[in-house]
Image (cartoon, rainbow, N blue to C red; front, side, top):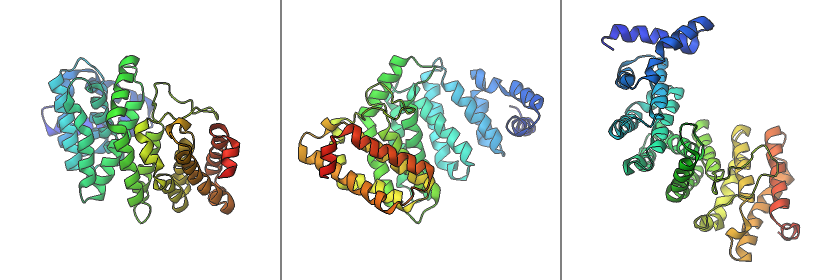
Length: 338
């Protein structure tokens, strides 16, 4: 790209690509701009756009094009590392001022390139530390970006990709799970305790979404069928046991349910459904298992008695699933004793 004039022309095309109601106009823009996602020679042009464009749609084009480019495993290791470092620095410097959809796209780019380079160089794994560095900054905007990075990282690692062999995906997912997932879940719990109220809705929504993603991870290489009411036991590793034996772990989800609106409280209930589905063998002693179940039953009983939030269809549905998990995953007599 030779001049700001050509950049202005590109911004017009991007506006048409994402906003035009004329299908022919959109198709023309897509055809003209597809070179950015298909030709690796345009990677430097994408960086130029990110550095200089004034419209979010041009930034979106550059980001989504790079996502497609880094999914091509033919790119050199150094180029992929350069893109990774550039994106993380860009998010730190400009992330808080970007439109949310641009921020999300850049985070997806960082997470995609991390997964595809997981076994190629340990520097790709530094994304976890960099995300926690965001959390340590005083800015709420940076804190939110840090949580979103972790959120999309868990999602990317848990989701198979057509551009990656399934066996490699599972090896990467297992490595990520063993190395980082418990730490990320602990971060989500800490954030839930800190952000229960008196912060913007989005800042309360992201940590509960992150916790749910961690609990929904494919721990054994056979993903849960979410369409089934009888989805399987959650096979949490033994290393998670101390965290689940801490009463505050279960309690924070009930607390979050009580103080948030339905869009957030539903995910709190979904998380409780996962916790109620944890394999019984995780607890090596009956007293520990009984205590865990007692905490779940106590909070569930309170919701049943007060009816809080159950007028919402989504909450009601998840609450019924929670009751169903007690029946499926625990002996009825044990539940009644609690």
